Image 1 (cartoon, protein in one colour):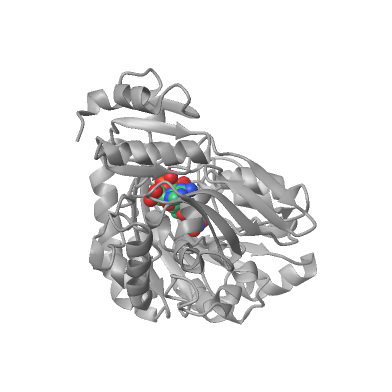
Image 2 (cartoon, helix red, strand yellow):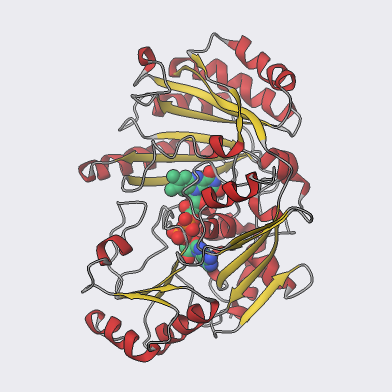
Length: 464
Ligand SMILES: Cc1cc2nc3c(=O)[nH]c(=O)nc-3n(C[C@H](O)[C@H](O)[C@H](O)COP(=O)(O)OP(=O)(O)OC[C@H]3O[C@@H](n4cnc5c(N)ncnc54)[C@H](O)[C@@H]3O)c2cc1C
């Protein structure tokens, strides 16, 4: 391996003046900014960051990294909890300059550069009254979220993000670019719909968009002490609702600022964040039984453009906080699990820490468990626990709370977890997550990346 200090100079020499993009090394003024990850708990110092402006630049950067025996990380939006968008002493293939978006309203499709964020996609599709299912924070990268699955406000109505992926242009480990779709390189297309960045660098995604423009959305909050009755009602009621109604369950501390009423600032709450694709009457009807369970502290639900809901929490979760993650897929939420969730959310280590239970049924259940790598198609919920705080001094407390909470509720889970909600938790956890699909993924890995060049991720080891 080349010494980290030499790598940038060597990259400049070998990739030459014709390299379409930027090369940034530890000596450069913008290195600190360029290497920073969304999760400030992860502090990696790459030897060289190659910001690639074209597919050709991606191929050349991969070739350079391999020739120098540098570990290679691929960076989309840089949001990954485990920090897989970067690597110590290695090469980061940074896609931030691949930002083109083109919407075709006639075919309801959108082609998106591999370095885009969801805010950009949302803005472009919304102009045409269309939407692609995304996550709940709009600064997240399209790349990592899509390749891992993609859960959000439209999951019940339109499926996971991977269920809406029509094609991907992939630069493989050997530098070749291939198109993966239902008609071409079918096995690669199967693998990238949930198998993460294991198979190559996606420079362009093509998605199906849906005619969704305005929605009825926002949070209903109850005091955390009412977790027992509210979650028990929610677990029974939500699955009976039509697919156009989404509502994820959450535990939070009410942020200390607008739009939240001052009298509930910093109150620990449980709640539901709604997203209903329908009329005001349909929305009221869908929410009414939950509002009757108990008087909420706040019912902040109204009609709004979908991008407004998709970015509503961006301000609370700006880049640079410390994050620790744990997650599980869940089939049932028995009373004992409710009690444990309640207990741990009474003692969050910071006001930004909390937990979400996302419904992953509805249209996401119409896809068979071997049609994509997402093995848990029968699971009803995806549970995530996050310890979050700006102060690096709280890192150990965030980790202890998150892991303690997870250990307490894990016995009630289905086994694996959503790959995008995990830290680096080892091979057993990755295998548990892909379940019966792991072997097929390992074979695809052996075909497309036999040397495991793309290993800075929830890694799938190539089949022998
Ligand atoms: C605040 C916050 C909110 C979130 N909310 C949601 C949510 O609502 N729903 C949800 O599903 N997830 C959510 N996530 C999780 C998110 O999906 C993952 O963090 C995801 O990995 C982020 O993708 P990224 O491109 O930003 O990350 P990166 O750190 O850049 O990349 C993550 C992984 O994907 C690979 N990768 C990224 N782009 C490409 C590409 N174009 N080609 C090949 N490999 C690539 C990287 O190599 C790396 O292994 C959230 C994360 C955060 C921090």
